[in-house]
Image 1 (cartoon, rainbow, N blue to C red):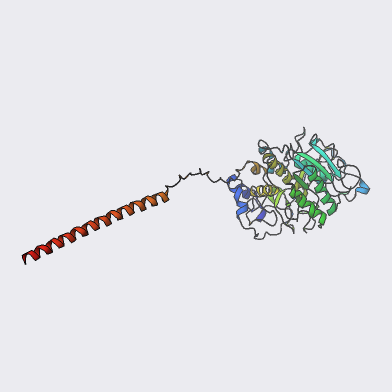
Image 2 (image 1 turned 180 degrees about the vertical axis):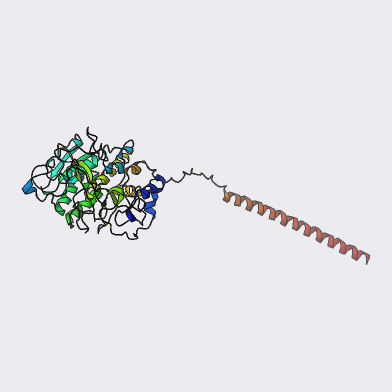
Amino acid sequence: MSGGSYGPHGPYGAAAKARWRGAGVVLAAALLVGTAPAGAAAATPAPAPTGGPDAPPPLTQTRPDVQRNGCLPPSDRPAPAPGWARAELRPEEAWPVSRGAGVTVAVVGSGVDAGAPALAGRLQLGPRLTGSGDAGRDCVGHGTFTAGLVAGRAGADGGSAGLAPDARVLAVAVTDDAGSTTPDLLGAGIRAAVDRGARVIAVVVPVPGPSDALSEAVGYAAAHRALVVAPVGPDARGAGSAAVFPASYPGVLAVASVGPGGAPAAVPEGRVDLAAPGEGVTGPGPGGGAFTASGPGCATAYVAGAAALLLALRPELTPEQLTRRLEATAYHPGTALPDRAVGYGTVDPVAAVTASWPTAAPAPAVAPVTVPPGPDRAGARRALAVAGGSAGLVLLVGLGGLTVRLGRRRAVGAGRALGRG
């Protein structure tokens, strides 16, 4: 896309992103604007980068032909270095501050290849809740791919690394060999991830309908301070935009996909909280080699990686605080927030871990004031009463004496008057 809303100067373009890179602005902007979107125009799917004959082979979320063609074969193509998503997210600028160490991110999907070189030494196998084998078997390849976007390390070929290369990955397999699952299986997978200590749970395969088990599992994760991140739709290109689960549940961080230049891949029916690169991205697959994939499942992996960077830096953050921080530091579009297509914008892991944190200054401590006891006012009143009484008595005595003297003078004067008469 080169013009209109999706050009370099449109609300999703590079110029808009540059305006929002200032760390002092991004922290408050998303949380102070109104929440009613102005209404974004329906977006044409962003074109995924295409390659020549040496480009990595495509990988999909489901593999309907698995019974006929078997599991995904390994790729013999090295990853391009770097891919466009890596250039967009710039994780190497965040790594001096945080690399995700100490954080476990669960990838709830088709499993994660136990032999994936990009995750060597940091992959923990959880349960496989359906199908054959354990969680280290990934017939579709989608779980291995998204796990690499979360926490993969670059190989000797300099291929793309995940956002949080020191984080641990917990594989929880909830799909069959074709990549299909159910709401109840997703719910059981979320619970298993929580019970094994995951603080971030990337549910990379959505389902079209809800269930009590899935809803309760989302609440179980929140109660145990685990953030659930999920795509707003399936990865299949051209799929409908109907709301999916668990992204439609409150408390789940719902993620949409964008392509090069920030153009949204679609305008989904359900709620969107954040967006991330997801169209034509490269990553590892089962058996080695690089693959290319597209969709909000890939974007979900990048957001989960950004959350891991934050948690490694600030492990005390709650799921709600993690969400608000990622939203506040995102590249915001030039529309009312949340935008229908990208929510609060495209995730920016660098700003998330380096921008200034708002602080609430505590009220200044006030030293206690000791008031000395007042004077004995009762004693003062008694003294005053005594003094007043004494003064009154003196006054009365004085008046009495004056009266006697005046009486005597009158008597003397009267006697003299009689003597002259």
